[in-house]
Length: 116
Image (cartoon, rainbow, N blue to C red; front, side, top):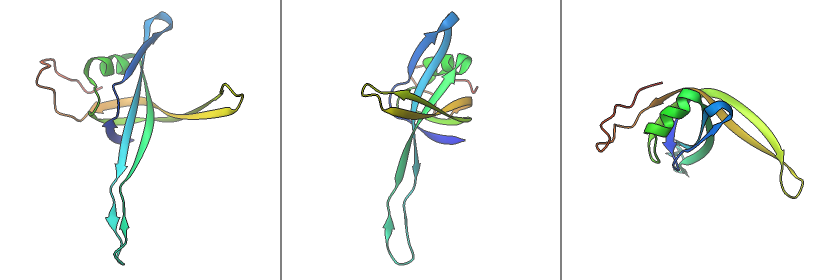
């Protein structure tokens, strides 16, 4: 489960048989604090690659934009590939199973933003 802010406009593409796939960069922040001895611990932001399929991706395409706050439930998925120099690289993604939009609806958009 993650709650975070969309960092860039989502990327939407369609694969075999018109299946929608959305890629979202989600930032989650752990707030800083002060230790009893006075030491300041700064905020810590983590970036997550979230992949949404089918109906979730179509919802992202219609309603989700940079800066929006999302709640995501999903599974961690790791994949690997060889880069141009032949080194093996790993990508960790969250494959979303559920999403809820937490940002207020935009005023210029009169459509309602459903929870999926």
